[in-house]
Length: 289
Image (cartoon, rainbow, N blue to C red; front, side, top):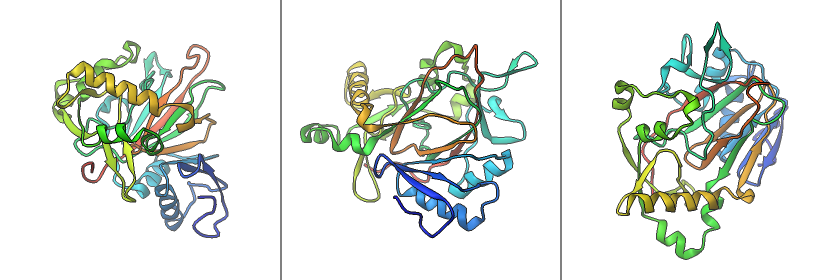
């Protein structure tokens, strides 16, 4: 992944081997459709992509997201950008005394959209305001984590199925996030079952874990199943499997939700403002074990 697909005028630097890449020297706002398709292809070679020094309007951000696939509307539409139902706001910022986005979201290790029948493909984050310290995003390589498990544990967890729940997930969030699930939202996201281990297109396997949405492993005592998930998450989030993204204004960070876990880190929200726009790219089909 150390070379661009063509002789394009941008630089590509690998992130933790085949986990992903960082791109500099490309302006997404003026990129051609062919360049966006090239970037999407480069992203698909790994699981994570970083593009530095961007300056995007919501329309330009959406155009980039659509180059990756079909965009998904967000479950809690009250926190989307007016006029842009696919652009979700993550922020502690207040305007006229009202918070404009979701604050303290994603503080524990999780996978976006694990509660959906067709789990999300990709999350895209774009930083408009970023604290000078803290507010990092951590991403865990779930293929590397699975491959590092002892063979007997790999065999034990393969074939296991997990019940994921949106309502259960929201109930685990930090109370300061002020998260409330309406009956309509709960009805649009009923509980679903997904494999604990996924088969990737290249034949390799990845753990599929999410701390918040996991209600139980089917066939196991619910608390024992959640404890097993906690132990697997602790394994998968060791430093050797994790990329830490330190944000700069203008960064675009995207990752494949089916093959990673992620979490946010704390920052001084009394001293600093964080403002990030998020896109979700819809998954196509269920998960293969």
